[in-house]
Image 1 (tube, rainbow, N blue to C red):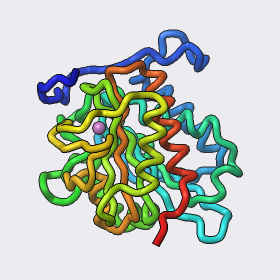
Image 2 (cartoon, rainbow, N blue to C red):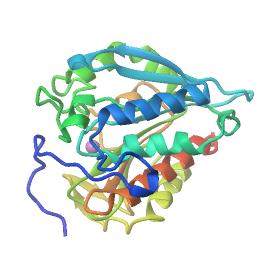
Image 3 (cartoon, rainbow, N blue to C red):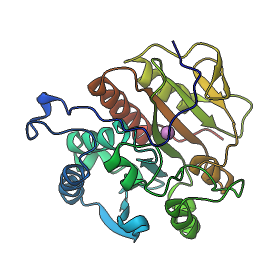
Length: 275
Ligand code: NI
C-alpha cells in the first residue's frame, strides 16, 4: 500500500549492493567513490567523452557523449541521480554500460548525465546537501537547485543532445509498483513509452489507475504533467519525447537495478518515432 505521507527529502536510504556483482564486501548503494570509479572505467572502455560541466556543491557533474556511426542516428540523452534516495538509476546505468559492447551503441548519438545530485547520492537523501530538490525549477516555477542552475546554463547543449529523446531514471521510495511519466506531442503515450513500461513490468506490477505523488496515473503512466522537472524542460526545448521512469523503492534493490537496466536498453535501442 502507498503511504500518503509526503516524502522526507532528508531521510537516509541505502541498500547493500548485490553479492553477485563481486564488489567489496559491505559495499552499499550510497558509495559514491565506488560508483564513480566503476563508471569511469566503463566510460573509457566504451570511448565515451567525459566533460565536467561544473562542480555544484563541490562535486563534478559529468556529461558523457559518444557519437554514433550510422547515418541519421538519433540524439538521445539518459540522465540519472537527481534524487539521492533513488540509487537504482545510477547503478542501473552503470550495469547497462558494463554489459554493452561498443558496436551496440553505433546506431545512436548517446549522451549521459549519470549523477546529477552527487551530494544527495552519497548521503542517501532525496535532496542535495543544501536541502534543495535537483529536479525542480527548470522552467521557472521555483528557484532551481545548484545542480539545476548549472544544467540550465548548458541548455543549448542539453537540448541538442536530447533532440530525439530524453530518459530520466528515478525511483519512488513509497511505491511497491512501477510507473512512468511520459511527455509527448500526441494525444496519448506512443510506442516508445509502451516499450519502457513493458520493460519495467518485466520486473514489477503496474501502479493501478489513480493518484500517485499528486498525479493521475492511467495504464501505468502519467501523461504530459508539466512540473518544471528536467525532463519537462527538455521536452519544452524540443525533445521529441521525454520520459521519467519510476522503479518501486519498496521492492528489492537488485530487481530495481535490473528494471532500470532494461528500460535504458529499450530507450537507447528504440526505433525513431514516426512522423
Ligand atoms: Ni525522483
